[in-house]
Amino acid sequence: MGEGQTYRPISRIGHSMSWQVRLTSVEYAVLIHATEDLSKVIKAVENLMPPKLRERKNVEIEEAYGHYENPIRILKASFRNPEYASQVFAWVWRLLPNEDKVSIIRDLDLYVNDKLKLYMRLDKQDAFSGLARLSFSDDVIKVIFNFKGSKEALRDFLLSHDPEGV
Image (cartoon, rainbow, N blue to C red; front, side):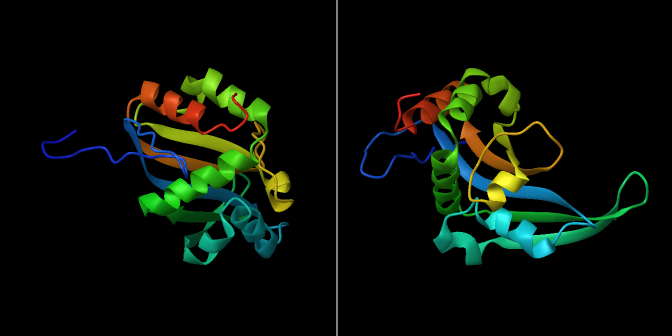
């Protein structure tokens, strides 16, 4: 951390807890195959955003080709505003089933890199239905939360954001 920089605390609504970790932004990335309906994939991504933020997202769609020269599109969306990113985190975390929260917290090293990016690979079909579930398949929406701080502080932050006491 540079001179004069401080961490802005993240707290749960109605709580005054402060943490040595700061959420700075969130990114979404999803592959859209030629056989998929773009509007349905966009709906799946939007379901992983709080309703009041859906119109505020920054979206890019890139044209690309797959391994066998099949056309694919890559949809990327993001919120660079830390407050919006915090709202997205709270929304997605609330949607996750407890077993997925436990998995992320228990195996944090599998989900967080050295730059403190928390990677969630969420099932695309479940997201279309308004659910959030971790998936190890290829048909996923990648949601990447960018934090500043330490991995230990991030673990404490995740534990504090679980209303069920995971």
